[in-house]
Image (cartoon, rainbow, N blue to C red):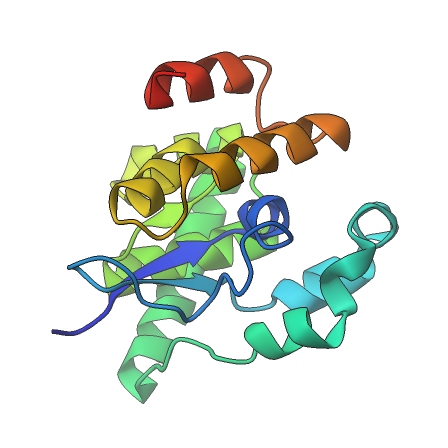
Length: 184
């Protein structure tokens, strides 16, 4: 059975990778879910001093190595992603969603490859929904990972505590929603 690819935006990767490692390119569940980071992650990370300070571990060798595997694209896929990116970027500007260029690139991947993009970025979610691109929130991915015995509730609870500790919860009601989702 082929992989069920799932693409993580930068923030989703940063929130998950420290506590769930290796995070990328490890298939799990009957559908062989496999996570990938967005194209251009490293460039976006290196340009952002705040991210580099807060997520100091990202450039440790084991995390860099885990990000080496990329989604393989045909020449046609690449052309279609570039074309879709241009359209999505213009729509983003016209509708004032506020998604960044790397976010729009991730959505173009999701659109062309028909794969979900994981994000909790409101502007990115609104943009995706306005043009029919499937987006998942981190909480949904966590539930799928747990339901498929990839990560247990103890590790997910530790992850949520870590996000709370570093003040990086995806949104204000995240802990409440987590407890409700996992009935804890």
